[in-house]
Image (cartoon, rainbow, N blue to C red):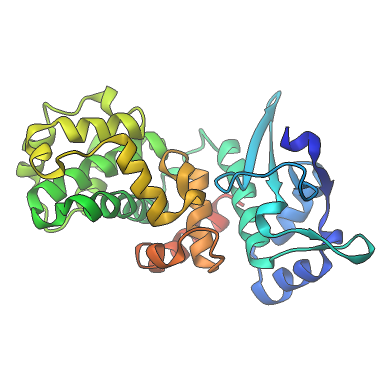
Length: 294
């Protein structure tokens, strides 16, 4: 529906923003993105005002035809408006982040089985930021940080969910365990496994709703999280980080989009809640992704 109501455009229609991205913001993958636009691998879609409203959580989508992947960027979420002489007036920071995130999403799909996403420089900062996002959300209403054993156990299973389901890491179980423990505060591995082993099975990591439900059912965790439900967790999450971060809970490219949005201070999501979570890890992840996948 969105694609049918939109117009595919090039950066020539956004000369001011394109110039700023090239000369001031210096995107390291700008030339790659321009080539992708020319090849039809990256489509910039402008939906006329009052035609169709683009959801805040959907800055881009990826499509597959045969074996080729394409990304469509919805320029309306970048503040795009029709200007004089056919020019599109747009927020250059939001445009840069949306294009880079969409292009990286396609690259991730192209390199799904290559092992490029298994680098420690991707796994470590990604799992750390994601885990803090989720645990901070739970902590806001349930004060899990008041009980370090419970906090570390929840941190561990959230990290494991990210590694297995969101990122789809294929690294060994020992490596995953190391990353998960690394996100905990002064972890006691024996105690953490006492809380987790025997309670969490493979089926409990299938999606965020299943994970949250399981956390609320495990007796030791239930004593702290009380009436935690998927519904009130999701409501709290959106209130903290904005609707733009909704898909970041389960889909890695949208998680990257939200990290990059914080890096560039676009305010597409709730920058003030996310800036301390992302910190320098966001810049490190950006540097690794743009050099590894492009």
